Image: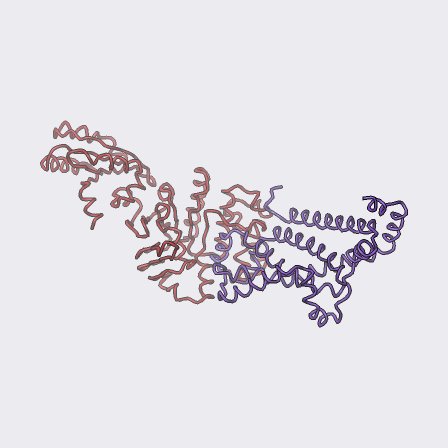
Length: 342
Length: 236
């Protein structure tokens, strides 16, 4: 289990101090595939580097199974880094070494006997599906293949945690899929805890069970992926989940009436024309400002921003009607704003 | 011009050819071993110094106190800015201590090394700085010690660049060797100076220059070939 307690990190730059992380609290359970998502500059890379102390936090603690990583000496830290390994956006393979040597690299650091290290490396080449690339140099591989070698290297020391820093951001969508599939399979087979740093919502949708949304160095929302996606509370989350809707919101400001945000969960909700039947049964003609659908894991999510004309009475009736429908969550936009302000 | 043409008259050419056959083999040998030994010692001193310049940097993997780095840089810049001929004179006492004399091929190795090792240190520094910092970060994330980063990551990853830069060093040192001929050193430089400058036998001087140019060509070709051969980033 990894616990981040009140983690803060600030840098001193030419333009003065920058707070990259502000009081981050997170708990990652064993076996989780935990997503940390945010726009660029949100502090994701700093956060992940604090987990293995490549960056020393300014304040707060990182606990790995209750052990305070900040309190470890150099040798102990090096040992921890064999338990918490990392893959990168740019793969970072040793370009002058063969794939086999690359995978053996972390084992050589611990002076593992050569035969043993080589056997382990060959086994991992099988795991990542590139058994024939042992004596090939990375430059001869595609990006996806290079990332597979990097994954094999990260697994060489049998780590308990794998940190993925934008590991698929340099890859095309299809290769991204196959790499994510590999990570999920390794998670399933070995029970390794995976922390995925990304700016791509699709990556979180694809493999994560929990997610934290990072904005300006702070966690604005955290929870089960399905929960966060069906009831995105923070503006940053909504922006990530339904980027199309972010625009609808800004357009809708000048309208009269009340804005409602609807989330439809599961395909069963699309069987019934909710807005049309509300117009017929309640006489409320809702104005649809935007709508979108998403698939998260195996579930369908619909998302709609509507405007209810009239006063509090119409609003109350509309809320009552929509709340009566199955698998639909409704929230009044003003409440969202109030929550964010708090 | 006329005088110049006379220097290449048939009898002069024949004389030059005679010198070529009698004195050049020994001269070439002296030039070669002085160059190779000087380069070797310059690398022995310059390589660790170059590594230190990178790792000890403020943003390096093992930052050293700023004043230490400052002193290192000032010393290197000082040695690099003294003209070689003057440096040769300056280190004569040191040469005497080490070799016993300041005259001859072996003695010329001392000033050559003193002149070349700061240059090699800078070359090594630039080679190592070319390395992608993400690779260093990867090594740290895998739990490498400072020494492991230097010997298992920085140096192996920089081999092609180091070979290219060492080739540059050896050709430069070859040029310095010829210069040392004017100050008591041996080799082709001495022959060129003795015959060409002191006795106006230009044909000998030109022959010596041609041999030196050929030597540079050979060193450069071998170096470039090795650098390309050793670089695994090139797709084959």
